Length: 317
Ligand code: CUA
Image 1 (cartoon, rainbow, N blue to C red):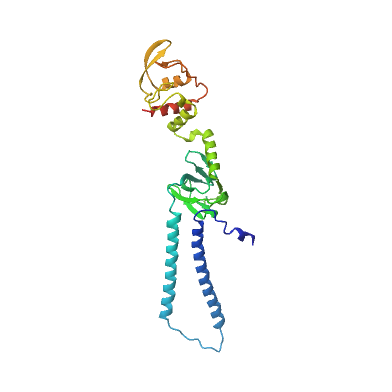
Image 2 (cartoon, rainbow, N blue to C red; image 1 turned 180 degrees about the vertical axis):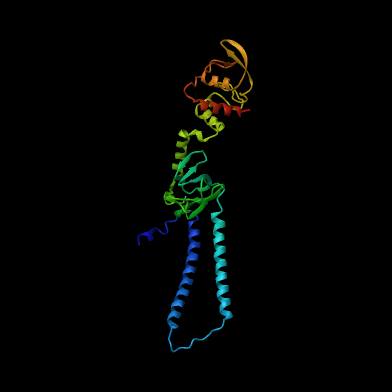
C-alpha cells in the first residue's frame, strides 16, 4: 500500500536511530506476545469447542503459572521503562552546550521562529546541517506540538511556559513540521518546514538578513547601537572616550559642552534637543576644538531612528 511507504521516513537527525531502536524494541516484544496470546486463543477455541458428549471440569488455580505470568511481564516492562528513560535522558534531554538557540512560537495555526539576531520567520525553520539546534518554545494560545518525523522529535508548546527540544540535522533537505496536538479547526493545516542547508549557505543567509533586517524588532537602545554602526557614525565618533575626527559619544548626554555658535563660544547643556540638532544640522553648534566637517543626516534618519540613537548615546556613560 502506498501510504506504508512513508510510514517511517528517513532518519536525518543525530539521535533519531536511538529513538527508533526503542520503538522497534517495544514493537517486537508487543508483537511476540500478541502472537503467543492469539495462537493460544485460537488453539483453545478449536480444542475446547463445545462437544455435547464431554463433561465440563472445574480447574483450580495454579500458583506457578500465575507467578510466572506476573513476574516475566513485570521484568519486561521494567526493561522497557529503563531503556526509554535511558534514551530520553542521554540523547533527547542532552543538548550540546554549543547549540544555536532559536525561539519557536506557536499560533493558531502557524509557526514562528526567531533567530538570535531578532529576525523572525514564519513557518520555515532554516538551520545549518551538522550543528546542534536548541529550540526554546512557547505558545500564544493553546497547546500545540512540534513534530518533525525525519528527526524523530516531538515536543509540546504550552501557553504560559517554556519548553525546549533539540536536534542536529545530518542531511541537507526540506522536512515537514507537523503539529501533533489537536489545536482547533485548522490543526491539520498547521504545517511548516525545516530547511537544512550547509553552514556556508546559512551564514550567508544570516549576513544578508542583518543588512536589511527590520530593526523594529529591537529595543530602542539596541536599535540605536545598530544605527550607530550601520549609518557610519562609528567612523568619526568613539564610544570609549578616545578622540577621533569628531567628539566621543562617551558621556555626551548630559554634560556641559563648550560649543562655537556663529563664531562665538557658548556653554550649553547637552540634552536630547542638542543631540538631535547636531545630527540634522551639525554646523549649528560646533564642539570647541573640532572641525565643522560633519554632513547633515537630514532625510537619512527617521525621528524614530534619531530617538533610538539618542537612547543609545544615553547608555554611554
Ligand atoms: Cu497546532 Cu495542532
